[in-house]
Amino acid sequence: MKDIKNSPIDSPWKLVWSDEFNYEALPDSTKWNYESGGDGWGNNEKEFYTEKSLKNSFVKDGKLHIIGLKEDFGNRHYTSARLTTYPKFSFQYGKVEVMAKLPKGKGTWPAIWMLPNTIRTKAEHWPNCGEVDIMEEVGKDPDVIHSSMHSGRYNFLKNNQYTHFGKVPGASDSFHLYGIEWNSKSVKFFIDKKLFYEARKGENGKDTTNAGWPYDKPYFLILNLALGGNWGGTIDDTIFPATMEVDYVRVYKRK
Image (cartoon, rainbow, N blue to C red; front, top):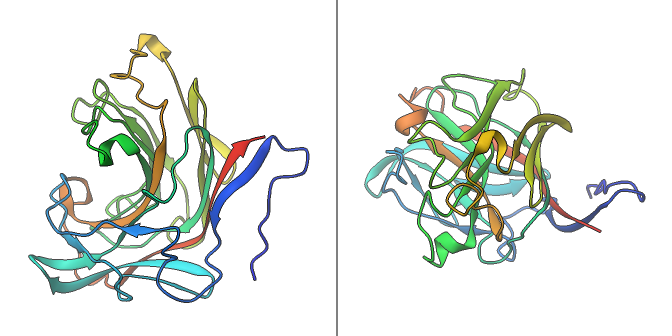
């Protein structure tokens, strides 16, 4: 069994939720749900996200595997998986750590990210609800990691979102730790425990209302591997199966 390396005893953080993937089966149904379908997900993505398919998502050898495949399913010619903790788990403020190895190949678009409960209850729509992208990468630009935050006023459609990107050598060859520390004033993004980017509420005169900073409410986690789409681009059909591996997901709250 994997040893959960909690923060030192003098740390301000307490582990409140995790999946260590110490089992062999479909992802733990007490912790994860599937989001399925093939409507492009607002990005013209080419995959159909399947539900409870061992072809596309399974846990083995202590790791979660999310696998993209070249196969016809529904109205699409590719399949993959999109896992979410909603409505089983959500949180407001804290620390997230996800140890992951990314897939290789043009057309892959892995992501570790968060959306608020309000988008699922239909109290708000995107982008007004907010979105926090802990890690995104596209295979056509390998090992370049993007961390971003989108809101009604600041989003990629306007090209004015909170965002930063940088090279992480070997992101597809070895595991790296992606995470955030989130409070009422800022969201700090970390890679391998080193500060990668900090988005501060109201920085550079940005709006601090819900239109500009909708990050003061409960969010849930999402892990997925998209294929193609507006950002993923042309898919190289020789890359399949394409696999995103996750060693663990951990969420901490301040003591």
